Each structure stands twice: as structure tokens, then as C-alpha cells.
Image (cartoon, rainbow, N blue to C red; front, side, top):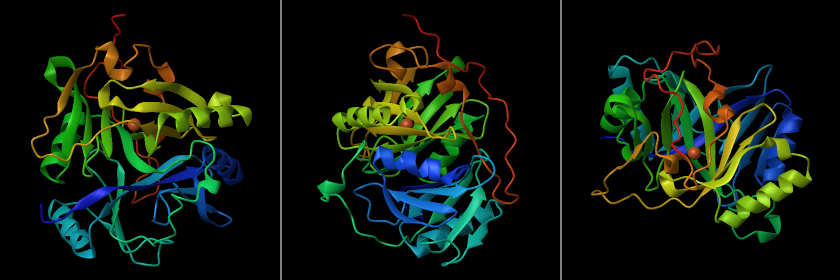
Length: 326
Ligand SMILES: [Fe+2]
């Protein structure tokens, strides 16, 4: 590859009650970098970039875009040229068009997801050792996006062969087709995962915590503030990725995962781990089932050209959920 995508960088959510959302994310332990009447910029404690989650006040909830950081302005230009050669229409946002973000471009990817690439984001003070600011789940940094797409194998092949991602783990479904795939650029289990479902939709954004106890503390604080119903699934341990997880729904239903416990994947001879869809230890190592909402509900995404919601396409593989054998 002549360009270098570094990592997942930020997500931009549309929310219908900014104040309510702000309180929810504050309870979780995010740092508020900056806020205006219509926007809130959030980051984790160890993050040195301006934000990893941007909330925008709008009429209806949606995902505006998910963004990846590339190594340099030159990488951004090379990636843009490649995507244009493939026939993609790019929307350029010059430096200053978005708060704290340098030059960036957006496009609709091969699955119909709204994607943005940028090289530069304003630096801010890291709060890693400001322990007096630690609260809630002590959210440290953005880790990954999980997206529902209609053709996982197509997305998997494109991200690996054309964008330079590597596969850490995958789930085999009917006729040995890929039902879900976990792909990374940074040496962790993933920057993005794709799952078979009507799509394109955003299933969740994962944020990394330093230890499982922070996740438990997050549950306690959320419950004591009346956010108990926001806890959708977990805490638990995924078989796939080994992650200790908790899934939450924010006031607009956007799903956030609190996550830790995955592992190093940077060796070039690392072989992707295969799971069978119906292996009960794949979803949850301890064997208990996920609620139906976790498979059925997700955030709708916007078309970057029209700013309207993208119509869903049926999932290519018929099986939508695992059949548990215990
Ligand atoms: Fe996740």
C-alpha cells in the first residue's frame, strides 16, 4: 500500500437531546474537550487528540460518519487518488471546515457506510495521570467500530486487499462464507468489525478501558444515576477477541461498548482465528445468550452526499443469529 491508515479515529453521532446525551457520556467518564450549543466533543482519558466522539444536535438520531486517521497529508492524498481511480466520489473538507480536524475527505464505502479519512487533529493535554478526573468507567480511548453490512465477505476482501487491513478473527457461516470479520490496522484485534445483517448500519463504537474493574465501576455508577435500563448486554467475556465487554445504549439508542482484554496482533505471521457461528463460546465465553435487541437494533447511517438516511439492503447470508446448542 502506498498509504498508511493508522487506526479508527472518531465517530460523529446525531443526537436529539444534546444535554441528555452530554450527561450520559459524562457519567460514563468521558472527558469533554469542548462544547457549543449544538455540538459536544468528547475524548478518553489517555487521548491526546481533540476528540474521538462528536455529538451533534439534530432532529433524528443517526451516524453521520466514522473516521480513520492516516499517517500524513501525503497518505491522505494517495488514498484519495486511489479511491477516485476506483470511481468513488469524494467530498473534501478543508482545514477549518470542521473544528479541530485538518483536511479530510468523506465517501460512501463498498458497503454503503459513511467513511471519513483525516491525517491531522488538534492536540490536547492527555489526562492519563490526572487521576482526580477519573470517574464512571474511566474511558481511556476509542478502540473500534462494529458495522452491520449486507455482504461481509465483500467488505472483508476490500478492506484487506485494497485498504491494507489484516484479519484477526472471523466467524464462518453457511457454506463456509464469512459471517463476521474483525479487521485491524493498529496491532489489536480490530479497528472495524463487519457482521452479517441488513445494512449498512453502525452496530456500536467500542471504547477501551484499562481493566475489567473499570467496567464494573461503570455499571455501578450508571445504575446509581438511574441509567440501569441503558445496560443492554454484559458484563461478560467474548470468546471471539477475548474481550471483557459491556454494551450500553445512549439516550438515542446509539450503542457503546466498553471493552478491554484483547491482545497483540502485530506479528506478520499471525493467523486469523476461525470460529463457527453456532459455537456458544464465540459470542460469550461463559455461554449465555445475547438479547435479541443486540442482533436486531443498530444505528442508521447517513449518505455523505445527500445527508439522508441510507436505505437498508438485505443480508446476503440468511442466518441472522447463532443457534445455541446449550
Ligand atoms: Fe466491539
